[in-house]
Amino acid sequence: MSSDDIAIRVSNLSKCYFIYDRSQDRLKQYIYPRLQRIVGRQPKNYFREFWALRDVNIEIQKGEIVGIIGPNGAGKSTILQIICGTLSPTIGSVETRGRISALLELGSGFNPDFTGIENIYMNASILGIKKIEIDRKIIDIADFADIGDFIYQPVKTYSSGMYARLAFAVAVCIEPEILIVDETLSVGDLLFQSKAVQRMRELMNRCTVLFVSHSLATIKSFCSRVIYIDGGMIIKDGTPSEVCDHYEMVMQDRLLARERLKEKVRTQLYANDIGDNIKELIYTPDPTFPESGEEFRSGSGSMKVVRADLMVNDRQSKIAEFGSIITLRLLIVAEREIKPGAIVGYMVRNSNAVDVFGRNLFNERMSLPALSPKQMVEVTFRFPCLLTAGCYSISIGVKSEPHFPEFFDLIHVARTFEVANIPGNYVPGMIYVENDINICVLEEGM
Image 1: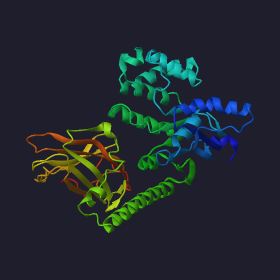
Image 2: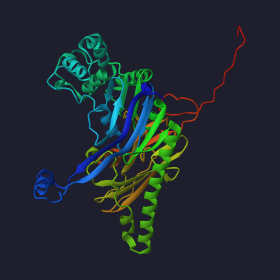
Image 3: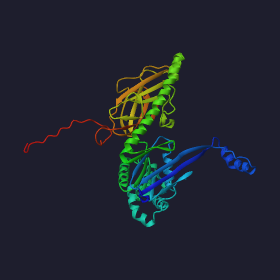
Image 4: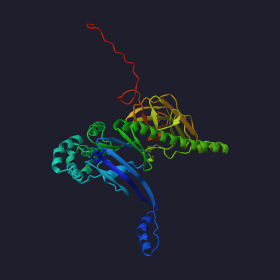
């Protein structure tokens, strides 16, 4: 492979951050080491080192579509920022050949007091694009953003959707040679998202792409090569199927290890014979629940969901295959005396927050019994996975009887999961439904 064929070369790349336990340690680090050197003493550091990247080496050929996967905090976004030049490496170097367009934090370079038109020209100049070139593309950018006369208004008057649409339009309409994307395809309304995905596919046919996503289905759909990063290091680099399968196995092993640890604790608690308090100790609230955070939770709190375990074929997992059985097991505690008739339900939504399907006790002509304060109840839903490939979330609701709808607890994103390995060819829509198809050629004249 000649150097002329390389679009991106990352050599011995490392990035270190200084972590300060207290705010005053920053001032100490600025002053004390200098004084210690003056008096001939060994300088003392008042920070801890955190290496976000360690000795990363990557070569990407021109025209390649490369995906980067890994858990949160693996270093994926750090690599993209260093390649784009918005972040400096601690050690190592990055070489790029060609104009770079980055879809990282959309609109991060916009001046709120400038109009949309002025921000287009300003962003273009930052990217090194001549004014005459933007003059030829300004109509295409305005048409793609589709925000009407607001393009002549200061962007501080824009809604968040308009802001994102204009930023995306600028990034994809400048004909980049290298396109860098960090989970920014879900912008604007449904129509604009369709336009965005279509434009992305067009760009991928004629430029080099570096793409970060948590959706393995999206990675497999877009990419020809995948790099798995964890702990700031490259773990595996290869075809989408082998790297994504390896990543899924690692994540499954971590989930299993965590469950084994929980089971060990439960066994020890039973062995200690702590009596009636055992259930409350076993079902302690999960710190990762809800996944959307407490700020997206509402309700009176008279009843509260303290756990929501998601299982696939009776094993803890966030990755489901078509035809597998998904179990949603909820543990709910009553904070006061609850009359009989309370309802529990869930809703599955796709990555665009569209309701796909849901179920609740009222649908099944069921309800919760009366509960005393601090009493717990476990509710389990089981359903077959008929979803097409993609990422999904589950919202959970607990409310009083249907005729007096007081929401006790409402969690907008309680759990997330991904569906992969759909049988057969591409399936449109959100639900995979088996069909019996018959083709019959009729005789002429019938």
